[in-house]
Length: 184
Image 1 (cartoon, helix red, strand yellow):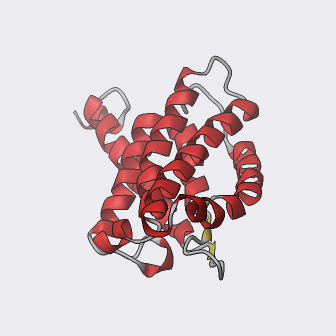
Image 2 (cartoon, rainbow, N blue to C red):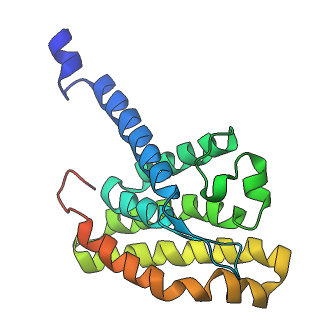
């Protein structure tokens, strides 16, 4: 009995391993939230959590990455200081970055889903999957921000200043992804 619990042959051990993986991943996202630079002209900071989420999606797949992102989002909504700028609770969703936060969930799923269905697990595939996820984050963020400042301004302050930096961060993140059959 004890050997079954400690080995991967026991389905219950898979469940607990998945839970631990997702919680650890959500803590990684929270850890990288504080790696940010505030721009004087934008309510949206340059941050690393989006790229951590996208990298986790490549490595963990759609289900685990989405659940890890939802866990992180839930932690912030419950009042833990895991969002950029120290904002927490429902105020984070109502604020200018609320759309980006929701976009992280959709991007985690899409990025992982693309990787799971890719015939080749390469750096190029990872980059393209994360690029698709990043575009989803832009769309969610811009849509929400446009409710506060208008569509044109939301693009000018919430997307345009981040494109080059995000391209560089995606290039670096794609190189860190390890591709094995155990990952996806």
